Image (cartoon, rainbow, N blue to C red; front, side, top):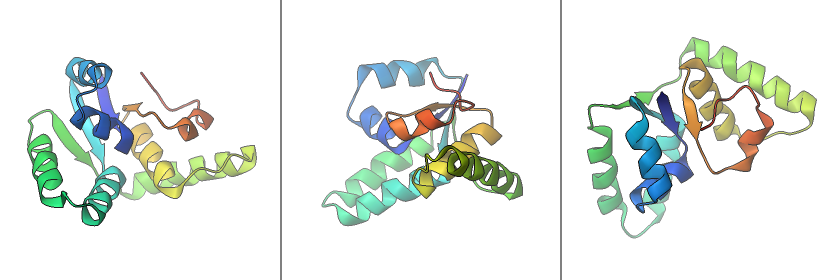
Length: 127
């Protein structure tokens, strides 16, 4: 399984959440969508432990099984479909979450998240 982490899943990983650690250990590959990195780093910039948090994140990203998912033209197509679906359903979600979902779907990842907003996207694989 290729596992993409949402911001809250990464935070739980750093905090040592056993269920998250087990899920990550079972994954063949771990993906970090670029919007997740942006959200994390925005939090680091506002917090008091930014340098420490950045060092932990850098070590995580340097792991051989971890890759960063970046947006490209295919991502924009997935984003547009998800955005339209959510609008038609009357269940809009935060824009960053649409990008995260689009990247996870594009790269055929299972998304580990604790955010109920993603429940509105049944096509998004979740553990």
